[in-house]
Amino acid sequence: MTSTVAPTMTVHRVTPADAGRMRALRLEMLADSPLAFLETLAQAAARPHADYRRRIAQASTGGQLAQFVADPGGRLIGHAGGTVLPEDPRATVVFAVYITPAQRGRGVLRELVEAVAEWSVAMGRGELMLEVVVGNDRAVRAYERLGFEDTGVRVPHPIVPGLLELQMRRRA
Image (cartoon, rainbow, N blue to C red):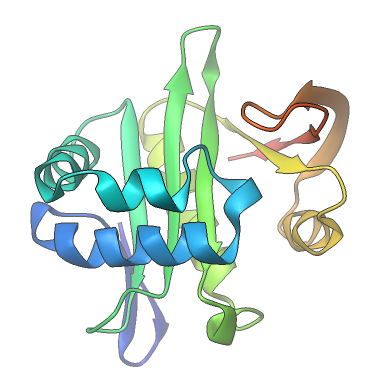
């Protein structure tokens, strides 16, 4: 899926050629929002570039894992991934959603989430699910504007003890 966000920006599924730019965006994501992701900036920075290339190659095809980026033709400005968990094969889990701060509020989030949704439907999954750190009200409101609803489910943060995440779902 390729969609146009602005005249010179597209949202597309990653390709192996995006690996270097994805690594740079990943490091930015971790520096800007460390609680939102499942690794630290130090861990990501220490990971060899070959690992990024391998992950991007895996996410560029198939129905189990996909990553989409907002691409103005230079530095990437946004990312959203989708994957399926064995315990919930009807839903696509939206993960690693990030928009560069200067681009927030400009429709990039909507385009990224819709790219994941289109891929999800094409793979036969009609529901999207994501988790947001409790207290990240800006993100919750942004997802609500995209049709996600709080399910009432709270789960422990996978890395930070004592922190909870709230689960949100919507139709793909």
